[in-house]
Image 1 (tube, rainbow, N blue to C red):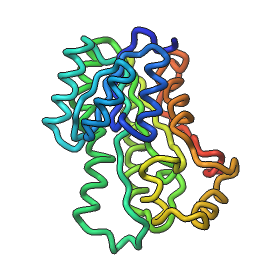
Image 2 (image 1 turned 135 degrees about the vertical axis):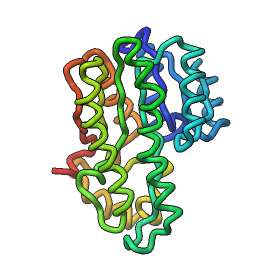
Image 3 (image 1 turned 90 degrees about the vertical axis):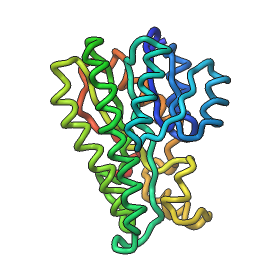
Image 4 (image 1 turned 180 degrees about the vertical axis):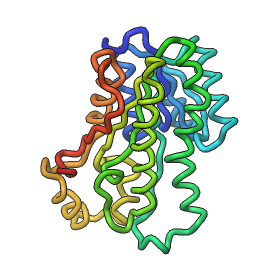
Length: 246
């Protein structure tokens, strides 16, 4: 029960890595708000776990404010924020990505971190502290060709994590990031272009431990970094990648 009596918001919490984080947090005693644009999936998971479902568009200022207000109304405080919601784009030469798709990637992967900070950091300051976790990517550290703008959005997130950590340390707010390698989530096909045994084998050959990351891997790491066990850890971007970035 490492998160007993803690409250948490997990964006993109209804599927993939987000669902893994939500399940781990709930198992460790946290009261969790599952914030997702897919309201049906968030509601179903919330019903199963006894959590709170919140429909949110993380790229919208008014929607993020409503999410924070709903969590505060239900919990009275927000101890943990996990910025997990994210999207990718299909592999392609950098100049081929449309402007609309570029804007969407940065709105969801980068602007969302700014928006949640606008509305939740002041609440954490008032409460005397908190923990923020940004789910970035190995692509932000060791970029893959043909995913340039996705990689850049995750590199932005890693730099934001470090800047936030330094600025918020006096307020007892810790800020860390996780860099997963691709995993068995709805985004896997996006990163690979297409999902075939041959492409999977080629992708897995770049991961020394020889497997994709799982929602459980990410949930376990997130639980540690957001718990009091990690009270001296801030500003790190921890690879959970089976050795890919070595």
